[in-house]
Image (cartoon, rainbow, N blue to C red; front, top):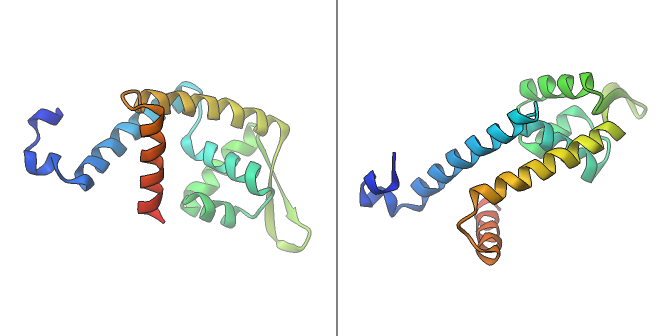
Length: 143
């Protein structure tokens, strides 16, 4: 649906606009990740490990907002590709500990660059100041 074809009452609702913008952003991110044989969840997991260090599968999923069934699938893919390692947690042998590998760090940088490019495409009509303002406002909504 083109913006001009939508009823004015819809176009004037921020929630409707957020939904449309989210759908467009989602498509762009899926396309950019697919081109790299990746997934947005891969980026989220690798970014969490990079920022917070080794952690349990459950805690990483909570930090990233990833459902545990999806989390297991994503971790298995990342382990298979050598981007993360799963080892027994020395402090609690019932729990696994997920660690970022050197290959995972390189993959994170690659995915980050690709997502930065996708962000540029999604927000191309906004100035850098407007992008910063949008990010700040969306963050406030989600806090």
